[in-house]
Length: 265
Image (cartoon, rainbow, N blue to C red):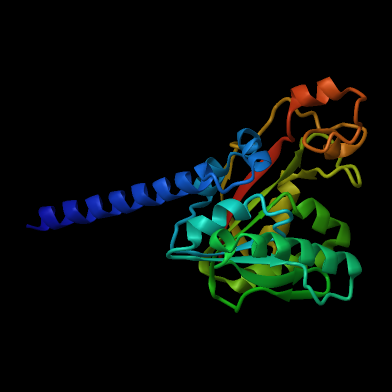
């Protein structure tokens, strides 16, 4: 009898995992996604990345600095039934005109498609002014994609506050998933290049009370030498050098990226 019960529990767990995988695949394959975003799946690997982080459809997830909403288009439908997505971005009432404009543009994106984004909650994440995106200990997972190199410009003290705000929002054992542009360990990080050393990122995040759980090479690109004259923005999709060496940069593709999973201690 005990074996039968155990087998049933295992089967239920496997079925639940398969259902979660199917739901994520469906969100990624959805016709509701912007075609230009879908075109970048081969460089951004959303299924592999989110699966590596351990996302589940019943989680409360914060997306820090969602930008134009590339991942929001996947996370919103995936979490809409049993979970919750909090998009933590600039405040519409910010003292910064640029931040207000960013918040307005993101708000228009959400409001234009209520069937897709109607359940997305908005929180304020606007370093160094405000960190008001989730109640302490209320979140299962926080994710951020290619943002840490921007935050690092604020200095060690400011980035420490950012990671501490993430730590505070997460439940004990909560997950912090990070993707960012990676500078080879044997090369110096150049100011405004957009690249960071993986070891330095791990050190900064662990200093805020996290433990590195795993690293993945799913977003690695060995063709990227990270020594371009306009930094990471020389590569697609930006192609900052325009027609200069365009074919070379297209052949390299998008940047080499670290993909890191941390656990709140």
